[in-house]
Length: 421
Image (tube, rainbow, N blue to C red; front, side, top):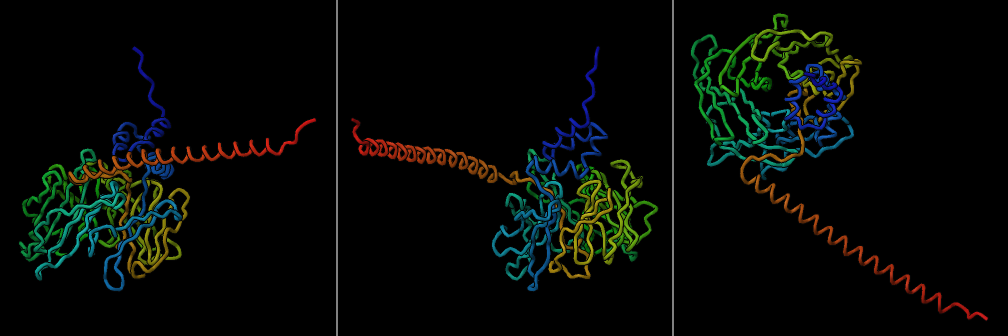
């Protein structure tokens, strides 16, 4: 019995370039070489163009009146301008970005509202590319938030979960072990669920760095350079250390997503950065990525740090007053943004922006969104029909005018023709 020959890698990549980002993960499991090549910037640029998607950064900052502001900066072409911001949210809304699913373009924003002299925040889930939002029920906001994360579980049907960790004000011991409250919001049930308290010394009363999504889990780096992992499927916690070679302090180490895997970057001023990735999805063994090193910014290494890997051969890097895109293949930097009024020059830009990858397809936050989408599509169809009728009427008028002009020319020509002898 003859077997079908394996599909050419180039053919498979061509097919993948037309697939939505949510479906591409299935193709990446079929071929190791295609999986690696699908993370290259050349493929991602082609995929963005063919699927009407975009990537970049939402800059989030405070103005001189301490109001939250946001704008979008493209991560591919500096001349591209996408009007992606949070200005479409409810009036008098002053939201702060608390969490983001980078690969689906979904944000969790919190707006502090004082009602009856009490601080009662609104939790808002939104998709800026389609200007959709939904105010979800509030968790128990009596105590301060330590960590927040959001993950899209499925795209069709659309489902997401949110995890919130907060301090309870109670310490278990004098060694800094805290009793932390954990709550999970599931869009299917539209309600928060209280989990068992997390007793740990990894999370203190101070907010931690943003969560990194990989393998269906959210990961946070603790101040002790350990990784706190929360599995969205089982809703359980686990902990494991960073690579042994990582000896820098908490502020020079960060978690990233590299080729779909959980990664760790160690940065030192003037020395560049190295990358390690987790060998298995639920393992604890790290492997250093060979032949991959991020060079330091020569003209400005102060507060310089890697932020996000749009691809496996490029990385966005922030330094005081600028944001750049570094190509690891040719060791060249390209500055995406150098304006300084978004954040103080002595603070890293990474504190003020959110990596963002999205398309323009609407999602169903609730039933109203489905009905609104149907109305929108029906209105579009009706609009096209009306435009077609209007075009036909205009065409008839033009043809009639042309016909009249031709008739007049014929009569005038007959009138002025002299009789022949």
